[in-house]
Image (cartoon, rainbow, N blue to C red; front, side, top):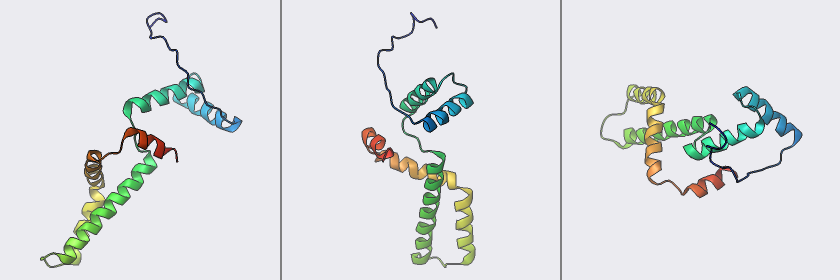
Length: 129
């Protein structure tokens, strides 16, 4: 698209980096196929702004583990205090279900959380602490 047809860009966001940080950003930009660290940072910021807050891979793994533990604890208490007899086979089935269905368990728990989500401003501030 020609320069005259693009929206005029008049706002600037800037931040300072150490030499080491800049080298890492430059390497990441090259690996991503961007022409410069500035272009790469702009792409990341705009993608994040469009998609909204997303968990990193590590955050997602931790959340899946917590969701699975929550599932197991809840089912364990139901077994202990329920009217049906408690057996090792029942517990093995529940743990196997938790391992095989961790993605489903996580999605269910995340969908419940979206109903009670905090304002976007708080999520952004909290993620930088």
